[in-house]
Image 1 (cartoon, rainbow over the protein chains, first blue to last red):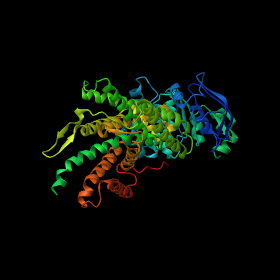
Image 2: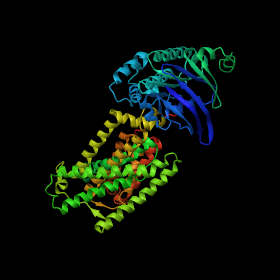
Image 3: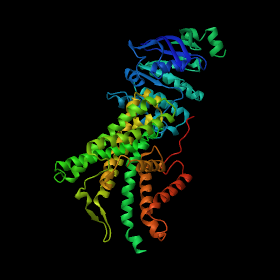
Image 4: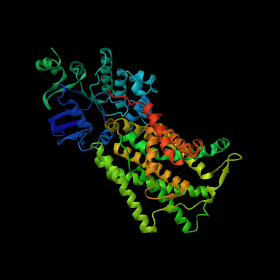
Length: 233
Length: 321
């Protein structure tokens, strides 16, 4: 479904990715692991079009998307819930969700809204509230819900558990699994490697802009290096 | 004392009409600022361009002998439409040519570009009109219908054109506020104003929303230009400077980036000016004449801003964590 082939990405003159290649198959949850600065967020930003690779290709369902602006990539079926939630603080919860569905031209809005409200009943209660006044956990639900409003075929999630209480982290990961079982493919970046590997099918490990390890989640979770470096064991 | 009371309604209407004119111009500054945190200093010339298109339409109709034949309301709509189209398209073109290529540049660069565009447009208008009419000071032909005076009280009458300015401005301000707060496009503009990168991840074409903001702000400026011409008659390529600065002030006074703020700021400034112009001399026994109106109005503005730097309706911007 998604093929990333040897992309090199620079921030100005500073290289961030040195030839990353990965693929995500339909229906999978794939996770990217690695320390801060390894290039996980940069990889997601390149896929969603916020950054443009200098070399390499990105294809989604066979179509090259690495030269498209972000709004075209969303329209193609890829939604990105960015790092740090980045909800629109001054818009209401409902307006945020409307913006999530901005690219959809069909009449699926009510249906998608219902789905998001079923996953996150709290958002339904607060739909008239200005988003900046939500708690951190609610903002994270809104960020994920907003991405789901695009009803994407591929969902990019960047650190969905960041700053959340453990109970909420469990809930968010359950939700990701639900979303996936309903047919959405997920590419997940996560600091919490254990949680990520426990729901993912496969994973890639990044170090300083390169992929150093890849494999099935159940293999990675018992891998000696991964355990030392990312699972703190 | 009697005269102070007798002229009060007159001064009130003048002040409000002037204020709504400022408000309409202020929208162009405030909308662009709201989306890009950038002051479009060429907006005063976009306003003037509308005024010139308006006068050209009226002079042409006059030359054809149609000025008296058309229904005045139809005439007004026609001139407004022409002015708004011209100014809207001009604002769009200025954004595309002079600002968009500089969007990633440091803040001061597009500001300088805007000042350059401002001078450029002044002289283009001067050059064009000099060539075409051998004059660049033009006066709006009088439309008797709008010059008729409406009797408000036994002693007070105001020209219909002042009321037209007020009504037209209120309709446009209300319409724009509905557009920005009640439609999907409006929500998208607000999303772009808050976070361009994230807005693009929603599927919003950020460039298009920014262009739309310039188009709307420019069109409102063009409408203000036409209303200015109908109200005050004489226009020159340099007419925009003072109303532009004052409208910008009104936008800051109301809380820049905020549409109702532009309206409130404009009306407050217009009233201060009108009252200062009429009452200063009466109240000080002639020591200070009407020419001190700006000093008076701006002193009060400075006072307000000292105590409310975010403007009358502005919100204190939260820093994102």
